[in-house]
Image 1: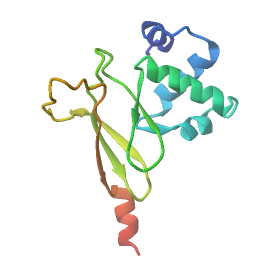
Image 2: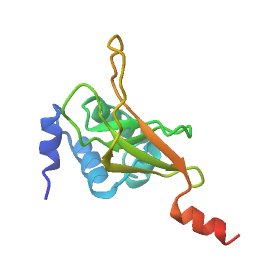
Image 3: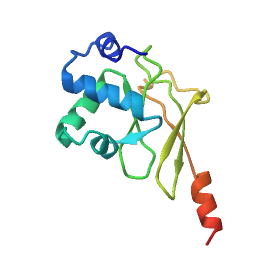
Length: 141
């Protein structure tokens, strides 16, 4: 079983009961990209502003990265590349019907040659389409 508090400490985060609960909850219950409201729904005893501040802290510590799926809602994803200043990222799939986003951790973003005078901080790769569930539901109409 993973030591979630150790993961926070390794990221330079001071462990508190709330931070530990939020990190443990998202590591145990969230498998793909998620929104602030997804976390608030799981953590009904913690107010939304505390959850937001904690997710921001986790993002700054590179435990999470932000996913801009172009659908107008900020999403987060557990970051599996804690190595460098640049988030090398992975591919995300976003369904334009149900608005869910899935992480394809095993599929890296293709290499793009960046001019030397530009310093990238993060890379994103989102493929928009229709998920299997929504596709089946459309077929029944």
